[in-house]
Amino acid sequence: MSLKAFHVIFITAASALAFGFGVWMLREYRLPGGGSGDLAFGVASLIVGVALLVYEGYFLRKLKNESFL
Image 1 (cartoon, helix red, strand yellow):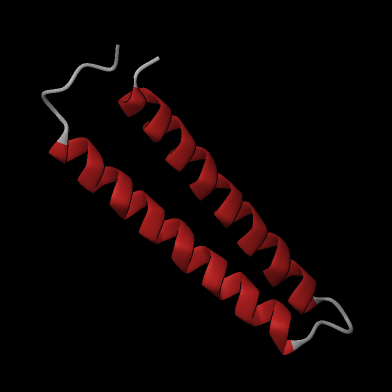
Image 2: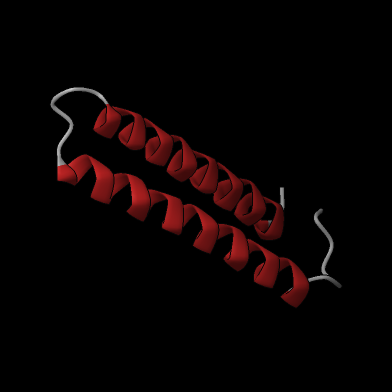
């Protein structure tokens, strides 16, 4: 597996985890007893997830001529 393929898999997994954590924190915020920290972590995680997807697009455009093998 090339470094490019590993990078794409790793960034995709990281963004999925960021979105999952963000949704989890926003759901915790809506429950009774949810605090402002839950809201802050949820919003921040969703922003990080979007930033990771933007970075992945930049990375793929930059290395479009490189092979995945």
